[in-house]
Amino acid sequence: MLLLISPINTQEAREAIDGGADIIDVKNPKEGSLGANFPWVIRSIREITPKDMKVSATLGDVPYKPGTVALAATGAVVSGADYIKVGLYGTRNYDEAREVMDGVVQAVKDLREDALVVASGYADAHRVGAVDPMEIPSVAADAGADLAMVDTAVKDGKTLFDFMDPEKITTFTDQIHDYGLKSALAGSVQEDQLKILHDLGCDVVGIRGAACTGGDRNQGSIHHRAVSRLKSLVSEF
Image 1 (spheres, rainbow, N blue to C red):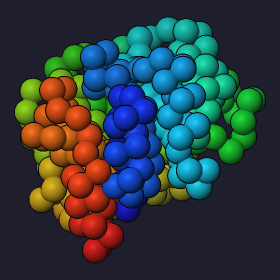
Image 2: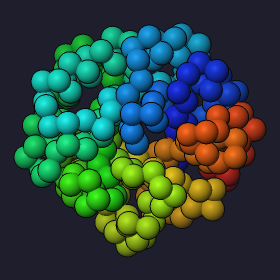
Image 3: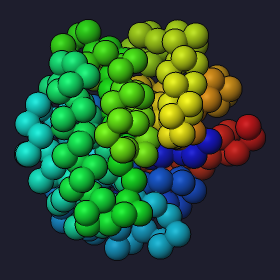
Image 4: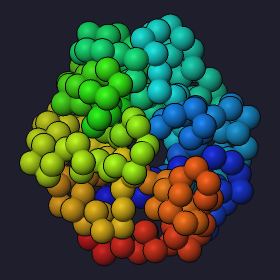
């Protein structure tokens, strides 16, 4: 299981790198769960990240505007991201989510065939009117994406497990693997949940809060010691 850590700037990125993260995921919590950061921030983080370490970039909690999202994906690729992650926030069903992801996949792969596209849904989709998270595996596979992910849309202290029990998560990851894709799981993940996620078939675990000082994704900042502890735990599985 790979450890994805989500910094907001170069200072936090250095902490994540020093702590041994597998993937550096550039995001901006001020703009939401999968809030997008600026192209120059993605570029600057790519420049300081070792070449053998992957950089991910979130496109945001995106609206149902396929052209807009495809253009954003182009910007992320040009800025140096290896993983392009799309939060399907404004899509209400399979058809809308698929249309958005079709555009993203084409935009990304036209520029760089080896870049990886991540379709992300939300475990608490019912709270924001987004597409059912159990539709995400088929959306990702049918659009030609590389990973399917689930996160939480509302960051209010609830975790992934408040909305998806182990049986549902297993069904989610099994569907993803049946399609030949990788699974990514996030949602205020805590240390004691890492082993559970691994055992449920998670390929990439996404973390910000647990890697921050005070465990606070908004007021805290990523620290290399917290990242190193998380990496040590993940490496034990």
